Every structure is written in structure tokens, then in C-alpha cells.
Length: 293
Ligand SMILES: NC(=O)c1ccc[n+]([C@@H]2O[C@H](COP(=O)([O-])OP(=O)(O)OC[C@H]3O[C@@H](n4cnc5c(N)ncnc54)[C@H](OP(=O)(O)O)[C@@H]3O)[C@@H](O)[C@H]2O)c1
Image 1 (tube, rainbow, N blue to C red):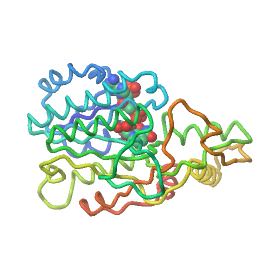
Image 2 (image 1 turned 90 degrees about the vertical axis):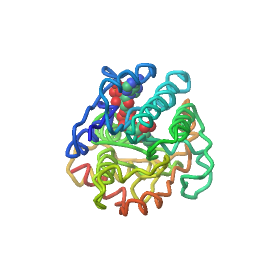
Image 3 (image 1 turned 135 degrees about the horizontal axis):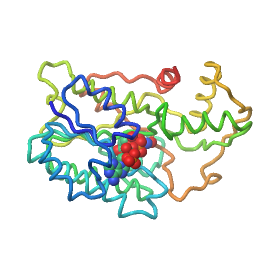
Image 4 (image 1 turned 180 degrees about the vertical axis):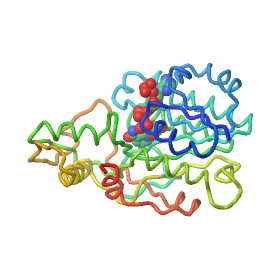
């Protein structure tokens, strides 16, 4: 296997570079080698490097900036996956693409299934949905893994922001009416490696069907951002990390206005993935405890 992994400096791309390395040769690229905002450069790059597997972990992920940067968001999140999937199909190279809970409108309290109606609330979600649709329309051996609330121990994310703010400030107000499952990038990368390693003896291609498949993937259990922050500070305190935080206040989304609207309900139904790959998902709290060491 010769896998191309995009998003080298991202939370997920960085983790995939570690977890997929036992599987074969990896070509792990950042925007310097392959700028996905210029989709016309993708096919020539692939013709030169000839991957047998494409793992697209890169994305335009700046949810608020996307509201005023629509063309760039759609270039990276729709046009680039379209080009990758088109080359992949022509060259018999399966493709893994990642997507988001933000394709849904966040209404109700049910867990979203893969086939549920979408309804993004902002440009980022619209562009990611357009990417999902583009990959599906190419109709190759592609897999779209939709996940939620990705975080990691390094880089800028909710976890590192909370640890920084919690070390500096005695009080914080955190949104309590958006519900989802915090997903460590390292766990998502490990699950991706697991399905490629497989256990049915047919090798990594066995993870793919002939037609594109969308799967939801996130740890079990859910919380609000407030609940996630509470759990972070509890574990951090147990680990003896320096914390100034004394008061954590739950607030509604209206009290923390952002340029892009966020979905209230990001619960993802992961049954399809767990059944197809015979996988058991740990609780998000156990994963958080592991990430904080
Ligand atoms: N983060 C979340 O909460 C979340 C939630 C649900 C789903 N997802 C999905 O999960 C996947 C991985 O996200 P992540 O959390 O790892 O995101 P991330 O940490 O923001 O990383 C995104 C990566 O994409 C790269 N990228 C952006 N524009 C590019 C371009 N024009 N050319 C080449 N590379 C470009 C970035 O490169 P630079 O470092 O050079 O900018 C970065 O390495 C994405 O599909 C995302 O939509 C994320």
C-alpha cells in the first residue's frame, strides 16, 4: 500500500501519520506540497505520486471565518475532495474522507443516522456537505467518516484552550446547550488504522465497498461543551495540573454569539460503523482521561 495522507499539520492528519505507518509507505503532505485551494493541481500531483490509497484529513475548518471566506471553504472542502475522488476512482485507489456533524441542522435530540436529512447552519457545514455529496457522486470505493468535536493534546482546540484559560482565570462561562461527543484525533486515527488492518484476511481493501459509504464515528456518550470543560478540569486537577479556575458557569448559546451558528444536537448514531467493522467504541470520558495521561 502507498497511502497519500493530506493535512499533515492538522490534528487528524498528524495522528494518521503515526497510526497508518505500519500499513505501508506513506506520503504525508501539508499545504506546501499540495495546496488544496488549487484543485487543478491535484490530478498532476497524484499522477506523479501514484498512491494506492488516499486519506483526506485536510479541510478548511475555520467555522467562523468560512462565513466570509466562502470560495476558499468550498475550494478545499468541495472541489478538492471531488478531484481526489475522481482520480481515486480512475486509478482504482480507495479513498477515505472525513466529514462533520455540522452537515446537520442540530434540531431535536435524536442521534443522527447517516441517511437522515442534512441542513447545515453555516458555510463550513454547507461546504463539507458539498464535499460529501461530491465524493458520493463520483461513486468510487470511498468511505466518508463523519465525526464530531475533534480535539487533541496539542495544537489549538477546545481541550488546550480550556487548559490554558483554566490555568489563568478563576471563572469561565461555557455553552451548555450544544450536545455532542468529544472525539480525540488520535482515537479517530487509530480506528481508521484498525479498519484498514482488518481481521478478515482480505487486506486493507476489504474495508471498502464498491460504492461510497458514509459512516458516523464518535466515542460513546455525549455531553455539552460545559460538561466537557467540567470533565477536563476534573481530570486535570487529578493529574495535579496548575489550575486557577474555581467557578464554571453554564450559559446558553445566545450568550456566546459567534459569526456562524452551531448545531444544538450533534449526537451521531454510530451503529452502522460498529456493525460493519465489528467495533466497540469507548466512552468519551475514558478517552479524555487517556489523552491527559
Ligand atoms: N475539528 C473538529 O472539531 C472537527 C469536527 C468534526 C469533523 N471534523 C473534520 O475532521 C477532519 C480533520 O479535521 P482536524 O480537526 O484535523 O482539522 P485541523 O486540525 O484544522 O486540520 C486541518 C488541516 O487541513 C489543512 N488545510 C487547510 N487548508 C488547506 C489547503 N488549502 N491545502 C492543504 N491543506 C489544507 C490544514 O493545513 P494548515 O495547517 O497548513 O492550515 C490542516 O493541516 C476534517 O475533515 C474536519 O472537517 C473536524
